[in-house]
Image (cartoon, rainbow, N blue to C red; front, side, top):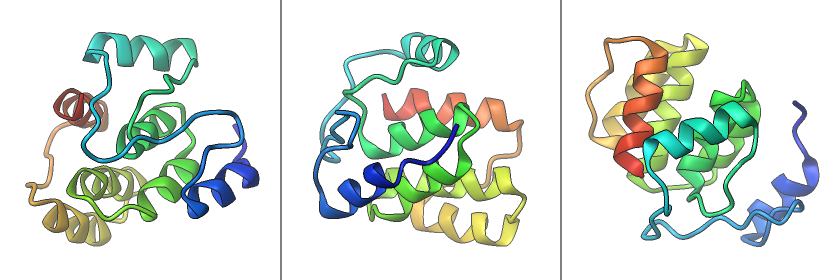
Amino acid sequence: RSVRLDDTAAILRGGDYADGDRPLNEHSKANMDIDAFLQSVQQGKRPTELRPPLTALWHAAQGDWKRAHEIVQEESDVDSAWVHAYLHRQEGDLSNAGYWYRRAGKSKHSGSLDDELRAIAAALL
C-alpha cells in the first residue's frame, strides 16, 4: 500500500481525508467491537468512524507503518501516544517506543506485537 499525499495534507489541515474518511475527535467512540475491527482489517475495508489512533492502528495492521506513523505523529492525545509507542516497538526502536509508552502512561508490552495490537484496539474501541 502506498501513502497518499493528498490524505496527509488534508490531515495536517484538519480536514477530510482525500478518500472521504474523516477522523473523529478524541472523545468520539467507534461504533464497533474488537471482532468487527479485526474483520475490517482482514477484509481491507477501513471503517470511516475510527478516531485517528484507531485509524493509525488499522493502517499498521495492514502493513502501512509509514501511514500509521504520519497519523499519530500529528496527534497529541494519550491514545495516539500509545499507538505511537506500538509503532516504534514494531519498528524495533525500543528507546523511542519507551518514550511514547511513558507519554501514554502505559507500561511496555511484553507479549507479541499481534497481542498488543489487539489489546490497544480493544481498549480504544
